[in-house]
Length: 149
Image 1 (cartoon, rainbow, N blue to C red):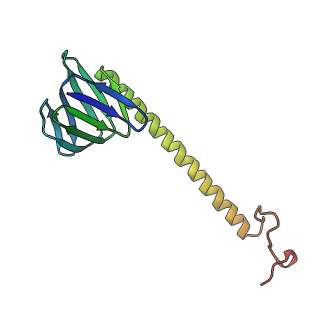
Image 2: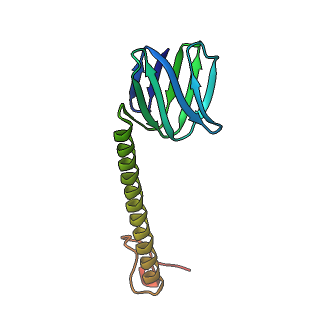
Image 3: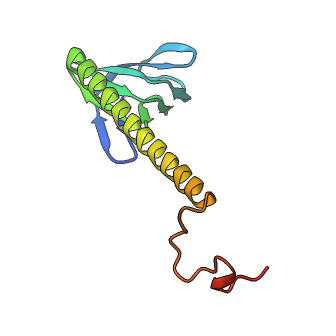
């Protein structure tokens, strides 16, 4: 079977002699052998494994995606993000590292958004108390500034 695994940014795997593939969708794990019926399913975040004609096992961690089998000899997987490695232990380490990094980035972005929100609230309170004016040059603010009610 021919296997192609892609993300929006790259073709990660193009394997021509796949003898067996295992993947996981919301109903559980499943296997695909040559001659499989046409099939389409949504994958969950999991590790997809396949064996080549030489008997070597390969792995790729996918963050969900779609798997399609067509013609009994073509398997295509499209995933939003994936990490490939033939060493399962090293793949686990890579995935854990990426997840931690993403979590730290998301936390930093959340903290920055909260700081902006608090700064905007402070600015509004100061303006409403009359301690400062908005930083808009030429804006009419009162009777002496051309404001008419």
